Structure formats: structure tokens, C-alpha cells
Amino acid sequence: MKLFASDYDMTIYIHEKIDDSVFDAIKKWREKENIFAIATGRNKFSIFEHIDRYGLEFDYVVANNGALVFNSKREMIFEDTINDDIAYNVINFLYENFSGTVEVANDNYIISIKSKDGNDILPFRVDKKISINDIKTINHIIQINKMTPDAKATEEVANIINEKFDDVIAYGNIRTVDIVKNTVNKANGVSFVENLIKKDNTLEKVIVAGDSNNDIDMIKKYDGFAQINARENVKAITNKYFNFISDIIYKEL
Image (cartoon, rainbow, N blue to C red; front, side, top):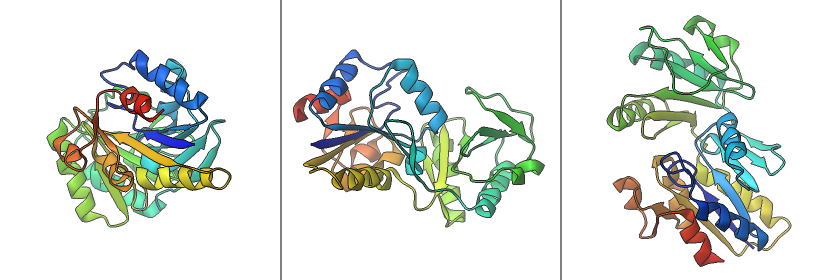
């Protein structure tokens, strides 16, 4: 038995499409009694909406950069939240120092904190919009997100958060900064799944694939693959590249 854990955006889901070969490869992988996991920075609402939209098969989902893990029945089997007071400090800092909204994910909702400048248009669904004065009505915070204008701004915001706050870690993606508890990363999320499988099965190998900053720990830990169009700093940590994850799966079957 092998475990393959793949990032989602620009790894499985590339340019708003999933290649047909990916569906076929995942199906054959699981038919051989191997385990397939999705490891994503997306929150649980977003990734399960995509799973349902495209009919993706899976055994585990590592969501929110490793803060949450779900089994095939969509039962949460692991959770690591940010301390409330620390989360409030981070939210306030983002609100005061950067334009636009701040988004927060907890167990039940995606919540948007309205901006100071009135720039509250978002390209995704949120369940609630609140003012900065109401943030202490939110608890059990899993992830904080900050949209940015471009990749350069994303890196700048992530670096500032990582320098200023010790108890959280910020991952800069293309136009979004994901902020989670400092113990959270995809490597730990995949490791949780790995150890769970090993309780009842012999696990021959763990294979991982990704493309972005939040995949670096996972790729390093498991000597993983980088998407051929990944950022140069991600490609620099491995000499194993792929176009579609089906390229990896077919070789490993």
C-alpha cells in the first residue's frame, strides 16, 4: 500500500480545469488499494465544494494547510486552531495596516471583516460580514486569509506577519496569504494520515506533490514532486517535476 498526497490548486486543479487523465489515475490508484489524499490550503467548505463539483475520489483531505484532516466520510479526525487572542491581534494588525478585507475560517463559517476603505468585493463566497469591532464574537479560528493585489504583495505581507508574530505562520500563495497556527503545515497533516494508516496497514511509501510555498515543508519531508510550472523557489528544493499528477501515479502503479 502507498499513500499519495497532492496539493489541489495548480497541482490537481490547473487553470480552472482538472485533466481527464487525473480522474483516471486516481481511480486506478485507489482500485489497487492505495490511498489518495488531497492536501490543500483551501478551507473545508471550498475544497468539498470542488470535490462535489468535479466528482473527485479521495480517502483523506488535509485542509487549511494542515489545520484540519478529514476521512472519506468527511468526518473531522484532526484539528489545530489558533489561540483566540493571538488571532484577534493578527486580524487587527491586518485591518490597520493593509487595505481590503480580512477573512476568517472557523468550524462553521467563512467570515469577512469589512475593510476601512470600503473595498469589500471578494471573488468567493463568505457566510457573514462583520465589522472589526465584532471580531471577538468569532472563536475557534482555524485560518486567517488576506487577499493581495499580486504575488509580490503576497510575499511582502507573509514576510511581515512571520516577522511580527511568533505563534502563527503565514504562507504566501499567488494572491492570498494563509495564516495558521505555527504548528500547522501540510507535512504534519500528511504525517498524521501516514501514522493513522500505519496503525492497521503496512505502508510501503509516501508520495507528495505540490507547487507553492505552503507545499515546501511537505515536499522536503517526503522528497516530493514539484509541478513543472511551480515557483522557482519550490522547484529548487527537488529535482522531481511533473505536469499532471497522473504522470506520477502511472509511474508508481
